[in-house]
Length: 363
Image (cartoon, rainbow, N blue to C red; front, side, top):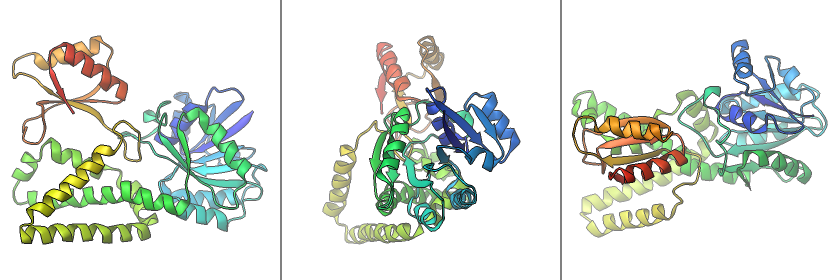
């Protein structure tokens, strides 16, 4: 049996475990420092066995997945370096920064084990093993960051195992990975937090800000609600990249300042045109490092029972509706009812159903 040890069986680790568990010749062991979590993993059937002993989980493992917070990765690697690991054991992680953990692994004596950095670019608004899904990584990009000394056969071995995730494997240099993910994920999170806190401060003396901040504001600042502890570690680990990106961001903001002062209508229009052109060229349904939301807006008449009829019809069709919101301010959204779903397929089926019910649907 091929033993796979997963440290941290939450959303990411639990989803990996579900991909591997039950496959021929694969045995999945979960690890947590808390006995209550270990029991939860077993009770939910996510792993074949679980333990609070790091040594017990790691010894004789063919693969070790570190699915712990970015700030804990180096600590786990150092503990693994003190254990006699199985020759040829492949250690990997799922952290969203790669240069720092790769550097740490190179500085340690891991014996005959090999470290290959990993970053599956998929996620969810939910967390914990309860949110784990067999389909989390399907069609997502799964980045691996081997270095020049990584044995090619080890990379191939890990890629063969990751076939079970149904993800698209991409090989990227660790520094290049951090530059790209910094720009498309880490910087947007900081901007969302800064903007939300700016409005929060205004709202302290005028609560109309929160009352009028409807769907559009919530959409562009959605990621400001991300886990503070997780993102604290991510940003600090990628700080050199982010400091450069912030400088570039400030250049863009200063250009807007110049255009506004000059009343440069053409320049402002061109900025919106080029950004819209690039954004519209991006794939809409591809999983990415910032998790997608599956939702639509529906124009419905303000009559009694209409919302109940929609919910009932979706339920009758076994469409899993995760949230429903009545939009009170419609200035920045095209419909009066916002419907949210956990999967693209549910959204697709709902759009068909709503169309058959003669409702106008917008995105």
